[in-house]
Length: 376
Image 1: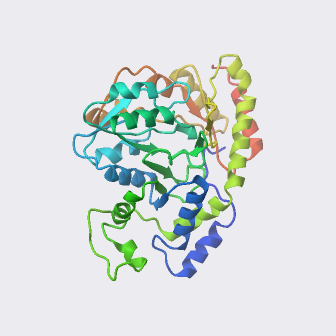
Image 2: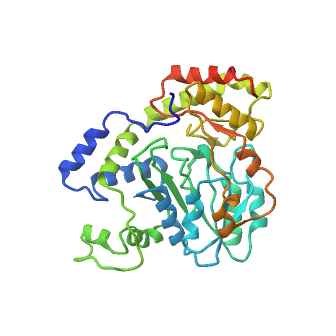
Image 3: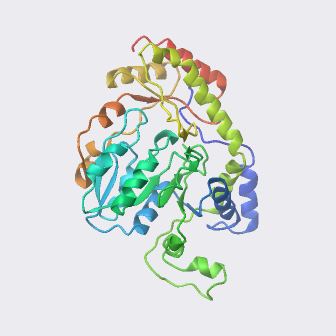
């Protein structure tokens, strides 16, 4: 069976984990945590990068730092992972879903303004498949109405919009380093922001509500409980694994791009015949080959294709069930406007195997097998 995903392993992960053990500090904010943060700050030109235990927790931190209060409204696409909404629901916000664009599967920026009310506090663009939302328009709307922007860039690490790294354009950016992502630490994430005014509050929030970070820097002689907080610090063991991957960023990126381009090139004839649709990347975007998907005619065809591929030893999957149609989505949110594309497009999408250690012969087998499918 060709797996859908396997976490990347590039060679020095175990060496760095062993080194972290020998350093005698396994809790967060040790040497490898600092190295990972510094690497991202330099690579992505981010003011501050805080490693977290997950992208979910990075989103929770962002929601808190945005000072969400009960009854505030937060605009986001329905076609996203549950964590995008959960982080704000925990703050008792109302989620307002807007429709997606069928070309990029991202939130339709033209529909945001009509979803704004006097309770709107935050816009949450989700960069699906590492392809940027139309951020110039989104930021312009946010400035016009005095709203915060939290980028859910879980899939957008090392992807760019008009030369700017995803996650660094809005007020906050949230990354994922889950084992399904391009660069992994098993479970983990990061919170990014540029405004220095958030630094002290973010440190206290991340350190269980204490000023422990100041204590470690020698700025106070003891640390105290200062405010609300939780435990968002990942272990040094996780950070050590991640740093080995960040060091080999180019190798991982190039292999994933090779797989992506092979899929795109060798399935293009099916798109030309009208049997599938392929991913679209706007000219101003540089994607990161996070995933490769195709869209077929409808859910019935998709079900047949996934079953057929599994019979042939290939694991392929569909993606999100739109949040607004889920029980919690009905309870905590509402859909602004009409669902023209969200449900329809989500029911057509099939994700193909994509991971660093995927053999190119297996990639060829996938495309050859899809080519032989007679159920389009």
